[in-house]
Length: 427
Image (cartoon, rainbow, N blue to C red; front, side):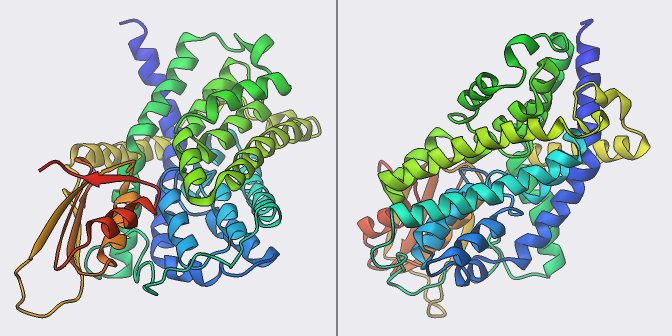
């Protein structure tokens, strides 16, 4: 019991530091969700050369997509004409950071890392995209969807009725996004708090300081696991409390969100072995070089600019931080306690008055992790010939498709092409 109060206090300190910036990041993410649609992105990612690769890497930086959530978006832009290089650039840069994680990085790790992290995402995206373009070029351009149907006609995260832009932005930023990151964020804050309370400061500095070995250890922990760009920040802060250098922590911040075992296998399936290897090698080498260069950069900066875990006490939350922490806690808890909408549902255009559904197919789907996955699958199903209505349930991992003359294999392929496993549910 003696350790519970310090643990709660440490977690509250981390939450209070992040809260004002994360709330603003939620707002900016909501604005981006209605300002940048997949159609808009797809128009800019076709063709070869440096331009599409650079634009895809740049577009991906502010988008709040994790390494699993980015997979269906990547598959969609690839299917709608994006070149291999642009697809890989988007895949590398997007999960490393987002507008919400940029503000959270500034709050906990300072301005240098807040700028350096998206810059590394851009560079690794461009380098990886160009490498894929050179060493595994498209033989006939991007894989354009033969149906000619656009990926979607609204926000990338909204399948509901058309409402005002402000309402849609607020719903995405403070409901959808907060629901997607609430659990991993709470886990990350708890881990950071536990590290600061139960592990003596610099306890592992002799083993986990700077240098290549420490960075390889951080990479070995980061690559196989699933951790989002925002939830990884307090964990990185905990590693720094244990003695890791800023560069070693950056390696974890890059390799953790950018890759995981599931994403690697899906990239292998969708883009081929050579591109998957390019993707993984670029992420790994980019993380190492970024970590080494960041530690070197800090040698030339004033000590006050070097992020350290013990600086948290010097920047303890005032009334703004505490009030923001309360607001953020309410938003996150509400998103967890509120029952997730059972389905993301939509209907294709059809004849008025026709309600009879001659076919009804239930599909079991594995690999969905967030609302982005649900929305992307729902759109893909509704674009399939004969589909009149499609509902997707994240909690049960099932989709229910109704329509006329439905082809089971076409429906399964529509889901598998996005990188998910799909099979017919048992009758």
